[in-house]
Amino acid sequence: MNSHLTHKLAQLPFSLACLFLTTSVLAQTSHASVEAAIPTALIARVNKAVDADTARLTAIFKDLHQHPEIGFTETRTAAIVAKDLRSLGFSVTEKIGQTGVVGVFKNGPGPTVWFRADMDANSVREATGLPYAATAKQHLADGSEIDVMHACGHDAHVTWLLGLAKTMVALSSDWSGTLVVYAQPAEEVGLGAQAMVDDNLWQRGFPQPDYAFGSHTAPGPLGYLSSSPGVRMAGVDQLDITFKGIGGHGSSPQATIDPVVMAAQAVLAYQTIVSRNLDPQAAAVVTVGAIVAGRDNNVIPESAVLKLNLRWFTKEVREQMLKRIDDINNGVAIAAGVSADKMPTRVMKGNAGPLVNNKALVEKINISLEALMGKGKVIDQFPAVMGSEDFQEVFRSLNTPYVLMMIGVAPLDLFTKARAAGKEAPYSNHNSDFFVDLAAIPIGAKVNAVAALSILAKRR
Ligand SMILES: [Zn+2]
Ligand SMILES: [Zn+2]
Image 1 (cartoon, protein in one colour):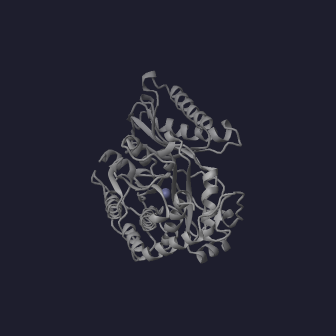
Image 2: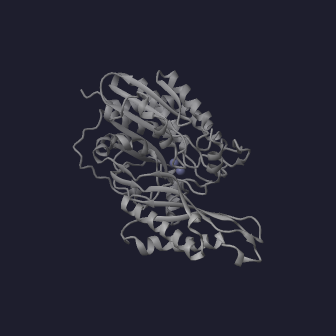
Image 3: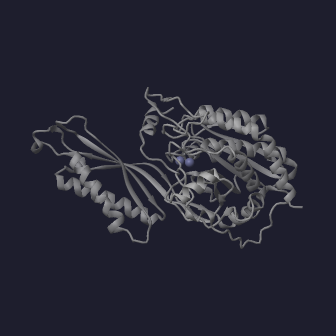
């Protein structure tokens, strides 16, 4: 366990993958695809298998919700996943990228499908008032304690994954191929997927993926899901900038080089990157999420740290932003009289590329998903968001076609009321009021199973 990292995680004022359905949620679907849906009888068997498992899944979900774990500390969650998958006959490997779990179920010849759930919770104090709300603080390895809550629905993702696993085992005579389900650590800080890859995920002899899927909660209405092709989410970078000056007495600024002033100038100058340097048609974000400097009123500190978050859709925009940040940092430091050996440093802490759903794969699964959910309930024209994910980073080196689906988890009446009040949704991911309606538990498991069967079902 990297306690330094854990401490850092607890302090991060930002997080990734926060997204929700927007006004287009009730837009019409339009399938131009010639794909055939999986047989109606098979969808009926999925419904039956998941319905029979819903009481168990709901109990798992409530337990996970009550015991949230922050990124890279998901040991309890991972143990639950590993135990459940083993009991179903999956071959299970644990502790990949610290807490990641991979389960393999070989079921004859055919394609290999990988399916992901992320496990980590958020440093948010729960205010839902649910009977199974998380109330305990999490104690970190460095002795600090933090509020912790599943405010992004990753508890539902894990539950849906276990529902998928059990359903696919129950229906194993209906499909042929290999199903790999895996639980990923630390999505919220954008480090978990890369941690699994760096821990030799692809050198361990697991069946290589032909297709990959993930599903994520969204505060859209229950019974709807978004499975849309193309660019869905922005690329992201987390970086720390350190300005080094010369500290001293607050009464004698002439004897110092004040890093607080340099940092302040840089924060303002960064505001011109998107507004003045980038093509106005290129969507991008530069956010300074934290300024860390000094402690006392009358001491000019030695250094100041800025914690930045960038969002972008193209490599060129990302490179332009990083170059401008470096130019601004150096320019500010030179103007302040900083010597060449103390120029500002930039540390890259986490990175994920944009999430781009594979168009052919979207078409392949949507026809069956619509047969499951009902006409007009599968949104395939959802606009891209500036939120980010690291799901795709696991498959980046393999070029695996993938789809991340967004599943509505908010009660329809709350959603309708929110819309009537001019709000986008009744609550958002990462909010202390965020919750997954229990009716979404079987829905997500069914969606996962139908997506997997769209690839793996025997075609008679
Ligand atoms: Zn999140
Ligand atoms: Zn999330």
